[in-house]
Every structure is written in structure tokens, then in C-alpha cells.
Image 1: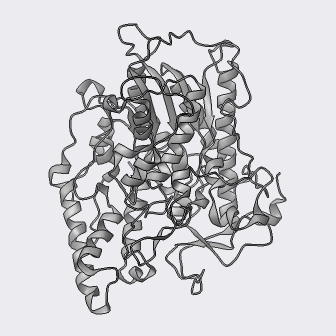
Image 2: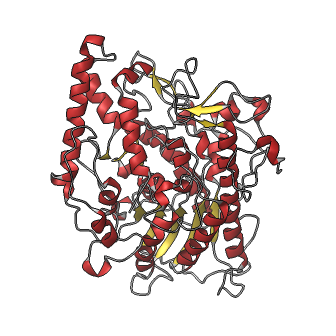
Image 3: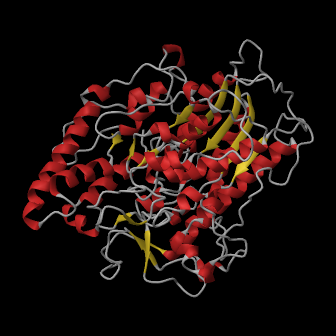
Length: 542
């Protein structure tokens, strides 16, 4: 329910933000309670040529630990594997030393091989020098080496680019990304890949000359027009839209709340100054996204809500909860800052009231996304003439809230009436300790002390974390009638479950994270250096 603004509002919060003292109740029914009165004609015997297409950002691209690298275990790739369709699934590849722009795990494991699980004070100068030399090699690979030339590609199925928000997806093209590339400078101090997001995007957008001005939606539309010579009713079976996190994520990656403005939120050159979009600005851009999605020929469309970015462990609450039953801490700062020595006058932070404003804004985003799905299912979108569309909602905000360790799991008094803990799949629940949403740390004995659902950047999931998203998608796709197949092509019976044992084997952080992952590494400055790369990657400018 809305709360009195004088009690909970942070200074500078726009009046249109509906500050609430309770979180939005998630919509766990993917049909949003609306059965389809009409449906598209479809021939179930003829599956579309493109069984899964995703339009999204870093969460769909498979970004983790500060880099896009293991794209073969992104959540779309996991779903494609379970569909029995992975051999046909096209996705971008990022090689080199740990991917793009800076793989924190790659850096820490290299230091671990050289210096063990702790760097002694007399080894610190050499470790710093080695880390910088490694970062220089990464920079050279992408700016001047083999990674500087994007491979020639057709239209792929994972149409996702890290850092992209709604406006980026609506406007950016291969041509604009090429134009954004500057002549790289070999900076001996800031050894970070220049224009890294544009370089990553050029491996996603189709590279043909006549496709240079396609947006992500135009690329998907072309896939939808490919119907196997008319043997299928449309070219895409399931289209997933997972956008919007970057319209609020910078509030926690930069620990700065700067609201979007009327004269800049649509401008690719100006919008990088904002960290949170006002609800009205988000709504205007969402309307454009909905119109673009309507033009894509797809049997089913799954829309994802925006996760509450204040839950991710890159911003750690300090100082004890604001009061009994409160979701919020007085301040949010970096997880490697000692809470006993935290100084709000010196350390980077946002306040609990600002975190509440960001969450309340995201709740308004998600109400608009859910409303768009409801309108589509009722046939109320412009031009639909009452003909319902087979659209679904995946409330990823609710999924993350049910996994929120410090917000709800450790504080029963803060739990809203609708909340219940998310049941981990047996393979994950049996891990010691079971993975949770806290910042990942090692135990110094070869294993994991805590965390496990978020990678080392504190923002993006680990491989098993992506598996949870994939499982929720699979559940919705089965409800829509999508057929999952065994390797031999035979249909799988329900329940169709993600192979988490395989994902655990692929997840290098689940069982044995870098053992030098400890607060002591702050003396090397690795955390701030790595976070600077992440902040640059997630704040795209023209």
C-alpha cells in the first residue's frame, strides 16, 4: 500500500514514484489470470524453424563475474539444450583471456596459481604488477588483437547485449555500434577495453551490409518471417523479452540515484547520466517495445519483470535493519567494505530511503509489464481487434525476492504475507552449503563458504543461478504447449526439469571458487578495479 511520503521518501524522489511500505505482490500465474478467448491458428505437427529467440541484456547474454564468456550456458542456451535443439541454436561467442570486458574469476584464479590463497605483504607489489599486466593483455586482445575483428554472422537467436536498456534495444544497430568504435588508446593506468559494449554487440547483430541498420527487434522480425517454406504458421515458436533491468541497475552498481529527465531519457548520448528511469519515462519506452514485439511473428511470447536491483549483493546493507519488520538497511555500500568501519561520509553508499524509492519504481515498471501482457491476452492492444495473443509473464522480481537471503530469509519479520522461500532443486539443495543470494566467498579450504547464486560481480547469476531462470521459463513453455525432446527426438514427459547436475559440473564457482576471494584482496584494489570495468560495461553511452 502507498505510504505517507514524509515518512519514507528520499529527498529528490519524483512525485510520480508511489512509495510503498510493502513490496508489490508478484504475479505467479503466467497467464495473469486471463484465459485466451481466441488463439492463433497453429499446426502442432510443424514446429517453427526457430524454437527460441530472446531479446534482452546481460542476463540473457550469459554475463557473469564481470564478463560475457560462457555463453553456451546462458539461460537461453540451457533451455535450448533441454528442448533438444542446442545444435540449431545460434549464440555469440567471446573467447580470448576470459571474455569481455574483464573476467574477475579469470583474474583471481591467475593470482591464486601464482600466490596461493593469500597474498603476503611482501608479495603485494608483484601481485599488483602482474594483475595490471594481465589486464593489459586483455585490453590488447580486444582492441588490437584477434578480438578486435567481429566475426561475420547471420541473425542469431540470443539477441542480447550487456548494458542495453529499452532505448538501446529500440535504436542501436550494427552500424551505430561500428560508428561508436573509437581508435583505442593503450592507457597504462585505466587498462580497460574501450567501447567494450559495442564490440560485444557486433557479435550479436547480423553483419550483412543490408542488415546493418536492423535493431534487435528487426532482427527478430526477420527470423519470425522464416516459416520453413510455409510449413509452420510463424517462424519463432517462443520469443522471450527480458529488458528493463538497466533502467535502474546503475543505482546499485554506481551507488548513485539520478532520475531520468524529460529532455534526455530518449537520447542515446544523454541517457548515460541517469541511473533510474522515472515510471512515466519507462512506460513510454515500454509502449514502443510492445509495439515492436507485436510485429514479430512468434507463437508464444514470455515477458519478464524487472528484478529488484537492491537485492543483488553488489550493494550490501549495513547498520542493521531500519526497524522491526523493515526490508531495508540504513545504508547500502560495497560488500568488501568492513561494516564496522563503514563511514557514510567517506564510503560510497545510498540510503535505505533511496533503495526503497528504487524498488517502488521497479514495482511500477512491473505493473506496466504485467498490464501489457494482460492487454495482449484480452486482445486490447491497438490493432488486435479483440484477438488474444499467447503472451505470458515470468515474474523474475518475485523469483529473486523469494531467494533474498538478508532481506527475507534471515528476517522472518520482514516477510510480506505472500512470501514463501523458493524451493531449490534437489541437486542444488544438496550442495554444502546450499547456495544463497549473499556475496560469494570461499572457506579457505577449497570450497565455498556462502553465496553461490550470484557470480563474482555481485550482479549476475552463476551458471546454476541461470539454471533457475531457465527452469521457470521451461515451466511456462510447457504450459504453452511447447514440446521438449530427448536427443533422439522423442517428446519428453512432464515434469521437464533442467539438468542441474550438468550445470553444477559446468559451474566453476559452485563447488570450488577462488580461495583468495576474501576481504584481504581489497589491499590490492582488485575490487574497485573490477567494479569500474563492470560499471562502464553496464552504463552504455553513444
